[in-house]
Amino acid sequence: MTDDPLISGLVLMLLGRCQLMTGQLDECDRTTEMALDILKDMELQETYCRVTSAGVLLARGSFSSGMDLLERQLDFYRQCDAQFFEAQTMLMIGMFYLRIALRSGPRQPGTMKKNFLFLVKNLPVAAKKAERNLSAAAGKLRKMGALSYFGLASLALGRLYLSRKKKDLAREQIVAAVEALETCRARVYLEQAREALASLDQPS
Image (tube, rainbow, N blue to C red; front, top):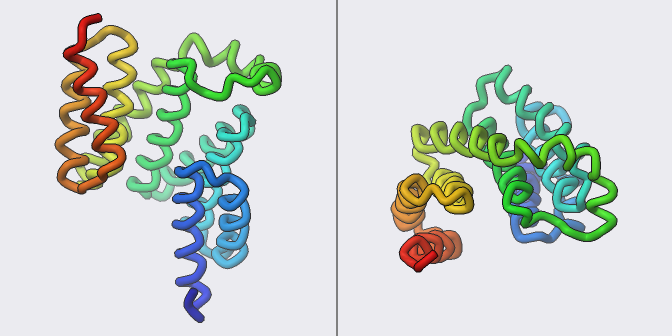
């Protein structure tokens, strides 16, 4: 790490998000708290850390708390016109509702019981919320040239459309994801996109 506390805080901020994406939730908690302690007077960066903390809450099954925190941070990004961070946050929200729509989120009895009211309210509209957030995120990310995030949003949209038997829309999104992820050489997600594209040609 560097002697410059600002650089250290920014590195920890990004490391925490990487740990969240790889499922290292305890490590992410510790890293993000360290980042928050350093970046507490930098509102935009502090909010980025709060989004990471919201992702940890969602991953641990605290759906209402996590989503409330995400929505608050999203409002902040919109107020200060931080469009990249806004798009990232919409992507996270869209991915969460996609898991709900596809029934691929946490399925432990305790998680289901704890989130019963949230699921009753949101399960019927999860697909619509996923599509709305992912479409908006993809549009913003494409304009910015943020190809890796755009590829993730397009792949998620493709999976949503595929689950709804909308194969033409699914193909359009997954092809876009493959092209974007090839360009930025995001190998892990590119492989997932190619597998999703191949599944479109398999018999139903």
